[in-house]
Length: 339
Image (tube, rainbow, N blue to C red):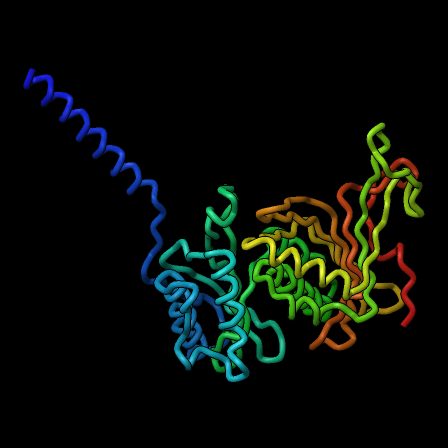
């Protein structure tokens, strides 16, 4: 009898030990210290400064709690520490952690003494992401000429970024495309950070905001299907003012503690009459606690003031629109622009 009790006790202890080892082995661990190595940059002194400051930032991400996150004064920018604000909002809303202990990167010149490093591999908190497995992201850090952190954003996928840049026709077009991609990344990350103030600043006061919803014609549909002016399918195009859109967005932000937006399939076109106006087509993946969707997003952006671009049109629809038997998406050719 005692031998049986001892055997049962041994089995119980063994199972308990196995479960503890499994939990410990499956728990994600992140490096406590992160080092950034600049392969190609500006000059020796600035490269060393960015290596030092970027390493501190990434190390602090893994060591500090998001709610009390802070950076040394020398890394904060002198104009309100906006970069720190963006990073803290991103930490609180997505729970990012740096996944490697060393990164080799290049310093890219953006414009006007702005410099960025890309390819910083991070992971968002899977518990915030509703247990999904697509938690890998790339972080972009933007610095001024003093090595102070000016901004933080999630990057587009590397291959998509490179593909868009390959279509540059000259140095001026390359610079503009770089600016547009940076803007798109920043715009996307503002939703992840739930930064309503930033989003409000991006839209023209007279912006046209469109959501295309395909109408159902089944027996239980109480709405009467109608033919849209664009295409042959039965679509209802709901338009909103800037104020209406921002109020709806405010409600969405309040109702969801976690929002994650990804942009795919980026395409950039220049307006044929107004070279400072660009159309950007994207495929948007939206994940949040209460609502998920995918669809086609179009932005018409005016770069007349390069320091303050304005969005004239934001249009989203779930499926391609059928035009003369072929699927298409809303683009710049469907709008008459008068400036």
